[in-house]
Image (cartoon, rainbow, N blue to C red; front, top):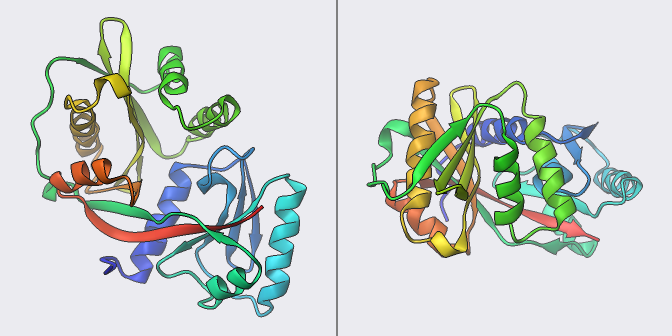
Length: 257
């Protein structure tokens, strides 16, 4: 599948995405950035491959593994379309690393997005500071992670200080049925954690939340938008394509327990 962005743009978006989702601890090794955050998410607990200027790949991999072992975490490398060095994937495969599902980074210029009609059956609210009810909704709606992981993710959100952020929610009565986090960094809008209650899906809530966060980003002076989605999540990919999101590039994790 063709990558739309050239290498320097992919590195830029990787860097911006890292700022939008900050880890608790970092360790730098020959251009690689090792990230550690209580195991909350793969992005915040993996090796970010921006550059590589080392000369002893096997020794560096061994050091990475020892560092993650100290943190009681599996070792994860995040390989995007221009990862370096080019022989890293084959080397990791010989060391029994497992390849995780492919994740696509989708996006476009904000002015190129298609406007899809929003649902007017629900109320929509946005907050500059994360309120208790938004956090409680996140814990309730995010069903694919443990409670400890969800608390870790909320901690990551609290660490987003330099990029501008805004929390959005869809409500019916006093109940939050959909949420999304928007983060602005260097004229890029990052869409984080778009979740809709399973009982309220296919009613336009996700589209409405996306429209709302995009409008906020325009007011902030953004001109580009990006998000990540597992390629096999066909319903989400279909929605993003309707809004004219394009696949910019892809990445996958290689993991060793």
